[in-house]
Image (cartoon, rainbow, N blue to C red):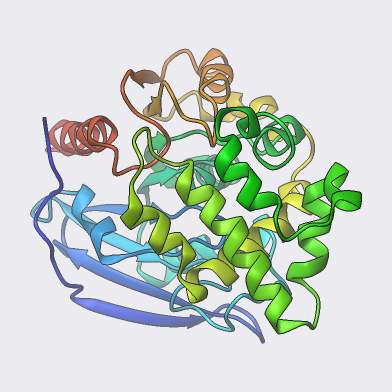
Length: 316
């Protein structure tokens, strides 16, 4: 089973002013002459980490990581202003042009798969390939499953903690109740809601309990950005028309695509990946039988590394 490549450090870092409010963090590592690949992190609002560089052979890839608006090293932190899917697509184009890249491989999981699909459908000619994990289609039913009814039946103990900040009278619409608290002026209530929201996601992300992942999701800086930005996007249908990613999948028919999904993914159930695969029959679809949602599940990591190695070998 393949493991992550050894840790590496960036050879270049950039801070790009993408509008009058937002500055986004971008880094490059690996081989400056290698295959350009952009890592698209989850959330929205989840940010990158140094470990994300290690999904790629540094001898073969020019590895580009960036923190989306409002999270990670990008500023202002947890900002919702001018923060939509179209804005993020435009930011990716700004990065691509700034770095002088003609085409790049898109690598994303969870919300990262969502944004990768939306970007590729808007700019198919700029995409050399796609490796997507934990497919999230951002439909209303997908949001309802995780934040109202569905995953709650699988993790009733974790769900009880998720419900704790919300009074019984508001629990019929948890997304709205959380959004109200995450955007209110009460700093204590806002942070309590952010931690409960983010820890719920972290706890449900792995097949077996992983306290390190859950603890990371509960860190205040991480939790506030993730919870606020996720609630903002989900309240607004991820700023896409209903069914957009499936309806426009035909635009990707000439792009090599690998889909990787855990059989027991409770954050983004595998039905989402299967629905996408039915629209993209040319894609390679790998179901990982003993995995949940996280990219750091051993079987998912193995398949992601194999996919990036295979793409590099095909380009050699």
